[in-house]
Length: 173
Image (cartoon, rainbow, N blue to C red):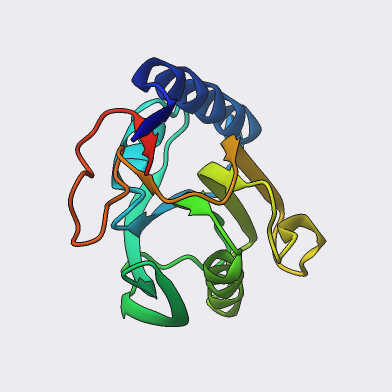
């Protein structure tokens, strides 16, 4: 295993993202909903929301797009419970990999009537199939780090079998 991003670097970048997002909504009467994508984003989501300086509603969604290390079709396994119609929605995920999950989620939240759909990921792969800002439903896209196509664990991301999520940094296998 090789450490790609230290716990300290993650903390700094997460605080920067939280300040940027908060600055956009101070004084805005439109509600902000932060939606964490389970399971991988739970640590990043918690730290991001904890550092927000504006009021936010919190919810979670779970979609499955992997079976082990193999990509598959998108399956919704847990929907949000918060009404999002007319609200600013931030989809918070651990990694922008191929982009298929985030594309699916942005279309899903568009159908639910979100005023804006914004993507925030801890990591973005350097090569992606989908460019979110060029898509029809995405208002903004932010990420903290970029990496090559390697399997990542730690800070919420797991190894095969669901282990290693509790490592405080991000490691490449």
